[in-house]
Amino acid sequence: MTRFRRVQNIAAIIFAALLLALSYEVFIFSNSFAPAGVPGIATIIQEIFGFRVAYLNIIINIPLLVLVYFVVDHEYAIHSAIFSMVFSLALVLLDHMDLSAIRYHTENGTSLILAPLAGGVISGFSYSIAMKRNGCTGGTDLVAAWVHHKYPEKNMLWVIFGINAVVAG
Image (cartoon, rainbow, N blue to C red; front, side):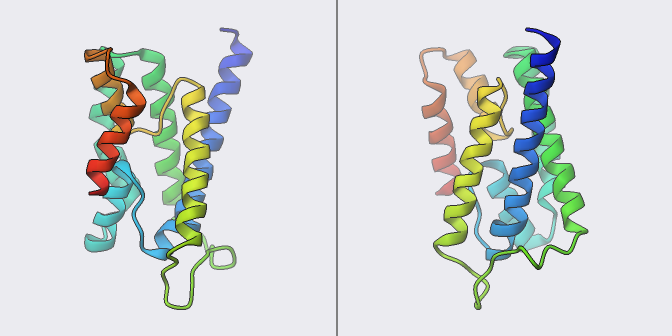
């Protein structure tokens, strides 16, 4: 792979992480719903205990990234680490910014349709950018990569779906 292509991949991953962090601030946190995966669990913990998603995301992903780096694939782990760290850093920075002009919320503070739909579309777009560049958003995707490495006959997308379904349940 050429140096230019590597820079392109990393720039795209950074863009996707920034976009996802903005989506969390604009649609998810202000409407009190939890997406799938580790950030979803972290969102619930943030809502209940006040422990920020950004920090919990890093704490959970570091051991998973180390495992994937040594067991599965170096490049996949590095790209996923870039996504995870940029996402968390962006959440910390956005937390100190006044986003009230663009934050979406309804009169009662929860949107049951538009915010989850918009958050889901942006999340899916961000995930696809990361995955197309041999990376992921971290968390359950890293666990799925490890499971797929250990059991290659398991389809990684179905493993991700299964883990996220358990989290959602």
